[in-house]
Length: 346
Image (tube, rainbow, N blue to C red; front, side):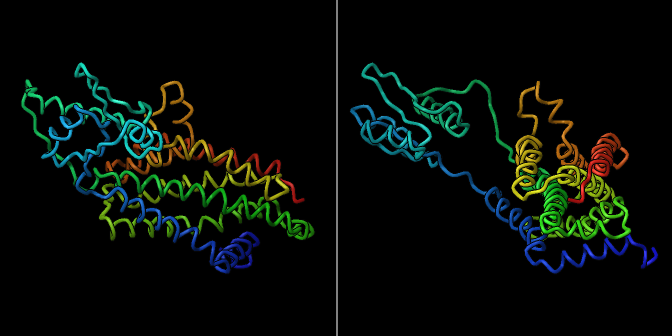
């Protein structure tokens, strides 16, 4: 490319501005890696901790304590009625067990809390076994801990997608509005610069960091947690690049008319919050109700994360991701076209 081409000069300027801001480098490279390390440590493969619960003190409470005294999978504490339910109210125990005079065991727990529901079932199973219940069929647990099937393996593509979304949206939208607030865009208006060149330079300047950013996170995840890349690395880079460009288009569209930092902050959160919650960054998007699935599966972050996981963890080819890539291209292309049409310098 001609070094004096105006678009190339604008892209070069954006790159120089990026490296002059240490905080931008940290949020692009350092913070995502810290998230991977922190969450990876939190959800690393380890021995499952014992289930702790509370039994209300009384003549029959000793039955529960004695029944599970030799079971290392449980930790039983006995408290008075008021203190036991106070601990349940403050989420210091998942389950409170009371025993009526007629021998009825009552489990008190929050059914909307998955931890409490799981603890209740395990406690009941252990007490029933201690009372002499026998299983009808034989079973055996076989745990899966191989790379590619762990939670950290599921998590890394989601964090990469989230980081590409945040970088594309905030890295363009916030910068654009900041330039408008400081009246820098008015100065550029006085030059013979094309509007399309300016907006493309915003995208191009950010695009220079997409692939290094992804490779940096992949390398960190592999070196620290041995997170594998089953599919083609080139295919993975193509998916990430197309997805990141779509968020650049959304960032431009969101910021094309905003005049205040507060406005763009609100708009960015409005656009990204549904994707943070529903696109499957930390857990599968399939957990949401069926009537929401058409909307969730059409979100650009959902498309990007699903494609990243398909290539990275399942080894699928780039051809198999044609649909998501076309949808991401449509998101980015339409957003850029609308931003170009509605963009205002002041």
